Image: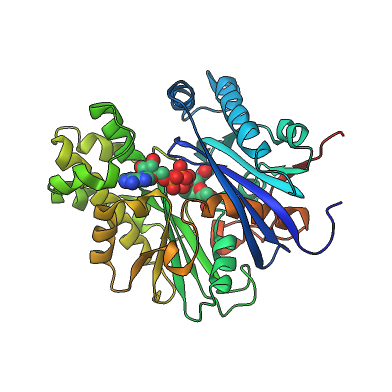
Length: 367
Ligand SMILES: Nc1ncnc2c1ncn2[C@@H]1O[C@H](COP(=O)(O)OP(=O)(O)OP(=O)(O)O)[C@@H](O)[C@H]1O
Ligand SMILES: CC(=O)N[C@H]1[C@@H]2OC[C@@H](O2)[C@@H](O)[C@@H]1O[C@H](C)C(=O)O
């Protein structure tokens, strides 16, 4: 049994950008954020990244999946054990390799059982499966934490949290509501592709990891015709909640193939921003501000394109004292405590699940 009251949890996330693992400590009682603790990052090296890329889109038993799980577990074991002193439990997201909530389900590589042995504390993992089983999208999962963040910053008016990772996701929050699963508290969904197609483009064409500072996009011209067609994709007309697989827009990738490097980067950046703006059309009420987390907030071209499309401030979460590199890792620390306490982690307005539930399995160490 987890001790009552507030606890320290260590959360870890390996995102769809496939660049590395983030881990962060958070103190919470499962409701409020009570303190932030240490953080760490462990990059995947080129060999590990190649293993993960090769397993993309694959399901358990598929070729290269066991190797990918081993990479994920090894990286997490190293990083999490360096931060776990004083942690009462851990939340381990794993690495999403495939996500098809309406079909085959959702697949995160890596076992929490092994990590519980390594860390010597209970590990909550497999956060998405139960939600999918109950008709939910299994994503996004950060919204309940976004709600806690809105309370932590003392927000009074509705606002939105935007994660620009490999895929984008948006949470509209009414901080006046008592809990994240209260009626009208949150509306969440994936917006569209964010950094993943840009990373893939610069990796393939230039051998780089990302469009650093948006430098390449800044030199290019947006192919407006491509954007216009992209924004007509049926996904943007679907009522949220809704979620995406990392490589869910192959037509966009194809459409920029003939463009110059700079024009392709500019166009993919504009597509990411345009998708967010389309998403915001679904907000129940206007957001007073949009707080941006994830690597995309470091891309000034992306931030400028977003600002042009919104009539409220678009700011990095650092504007309110949060850490945009660690917000997702902190989210999985927070969600782990909620799971251990029997509190819900998703609800109909965040994933479309049929009723609020706390997903996740708990693995206990044998010692
Ligand atoms: N300085 C920068 N300039 C441009 N892009 C950047 C910069 N820093 C980070 N990024 C982009 O952000 C990505 C990492 O973002 P993040 O860590 O939020 O993604 P993730 O957590 O892997 O994805 P997701 O949230 O979809 O699971 C990088 O791969 C890169 O594309
Ligand atoms: C299935 C999956 O891993 N989805 C990720 C991905 O990356 C961003 C977006 O798509 C979001 O839905 C989710 O991650 C964050 C952490 C979430 O669940 O909130």
